[in-house]
Length: 234
Ligand SMILES: [Zn+2]
Ligand SMILES: [Zn+2]
Image (tube, rainbow, N blue to C red; front, side, top):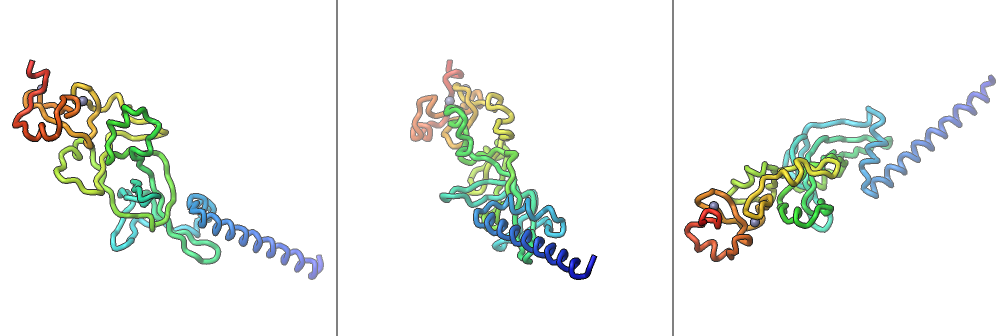
């Protein structure tokens, strides 16, 4: 092979590599514009050198650790809840650093719209359901920490904060677990308790009843010194 021939071959090769790199960079910019971070991560993480994982991050003076739950900014001022599962910094071919967080979503009532109406009525605005859906999002989407309690813990809280939620079931593969039918029930209507609704406590059987079901208004209930349910009265 002559020298000139060899040069020709190697320069074509470099050109091709450059084109591939340019194409990749264009593709990444497009994906970033569309906020499709999942695909950006997929493209960049094939190369181990381009990715660094972290255990904690500091954003707006708050430290977040992997494993903590977060409030995430949604569209229309809605707040989403998610678990922080990974903190990654990707490094593209043009030496840009792209920080992302990987999160596992918790669904809220508004994201369970496939459920029948009588079941939705038992679900609280502050209730969350762990899903098996993951995403990569921008760090700027973090609003703050979220606290997720069990139903029993949540029920005992006297004063509620904005960032306190509870979970009594998961929503894996779009199925509630434990199923709705197995949730602890209250009142004579035998429905799972929704802490957003008003209840009254029977002094005798120590059970909770919906004000609506026992036919009391909130004012009437407040005035009552003691409540005895219909079953205990008879
Ligand atoms: Zn009831
Ligand atoms: Zn009773």
